[in-house]
Length: 382
Image (cartoon, one colour):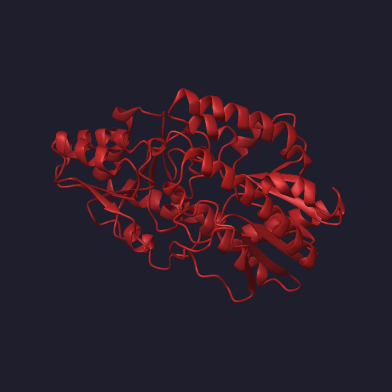
């Protein structure tokens, strides 16, 4: 089976890039599969996960955002539309050469092109890595929310219904946001690694990860941890990630006197080690597509304390078994549950065992097999 993933880049600090490479590698190992990744902007950025030599990487060299900061708003948009035309022509040529069985849209640009350039011998699938209404929920201004609604209206009424299948990451998203759609399936993301040496749970460290962006809601986590510190001043919180709110969060930490307990660690290429050197994973997002970092924490044997945001934590965490689910922004309860895991070592270790068992469901072998089943169903027209 010839399988093509289309996205912007695999050289970027993000879960989408990492899991796409992980899935492509796993599918390429299956007998009879020929796997391609077609990208548009692969010049810069770190390697998020090593690509198998069995996966064919094709860079269309469009570079949508190259030197955008040096140009005016009008010039940026004129160049963008010119690059869209170049992208569409190049993508049509590459796909006609490959003649795939399955084409999967993962990125932000090709989704608008595939439905018009497709050969009907191909089956086209759209992957959603965010909750359906992410545009309006991520927006921080009125203009952003209006722009999000317009984009949603166009995409969901004129683009996505033309795909043979839509794949979302959680049952919660499907049941909440995709009612009335008969071409939607659920396949979660795979964990990118297997941890053979999980945390010993002895370190007095709570860990969290994510972009330093308002939707990750780290300001709420820091406030809640301030309550934890009052009872357990010897425990610390490490937050891994970078983003535009770094200075604001730094100021909050110092303003509230938490500089000896809360640390912004920046980006790390070795998150497995960071997780293994911690004892509790805390998660404070306002909205998610899946929350892969929760699965990664569970794989490393950490119990989870998470806000029950849409969508992701509810699908992954079983409240009271492998972690705790907290109403969004209930900082008092978030602090209480972290304290309960600090104070009760037996509970912490019991939840860690359950977390490891739960993470097995997300191992790439299982997820790749779910994708193969879906591909065969789509090709068969079921």
